[in-house]
Length: 173
Image (tube, rainbow, N blue to C red; front, side, top):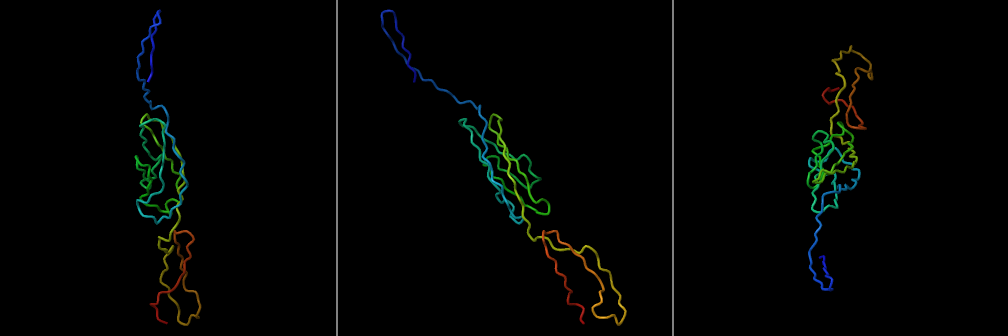
């Protein structure tokens, strides 16, 4: 409340008051908090929360909208209102990690951005496979025991897998 006084030459005065209100303009950019790096297994369920973006803005009654700088296909999504980042599924064999850019924009279009790293760890989720076909083998009668008759070669796309070979028990002796 502001008072205004008027005085005439004789010293007589009068006073009035008025209220001065200052309205806020949207003239400040939002501030986006940093997001810690995250490590998740490729076996996490679709919809798993990866991280949450959080922003502040000194402008009163300002709204923030969150988005990802890149969505990596449909692997990651962000809720535009809450800033919650989720995954629709991860696959180590497709990507071992992501550098994720998160953007916040206020109603005036001012933006801020931060990055975090999502590291994907491997699970044993793929079956081994033979890298070549073993053809039929014909042996002459009387071949010595212990003679090599074929070589099997297999691989597994899962990281650091140890493969063990054995014969199916369908041959008799």
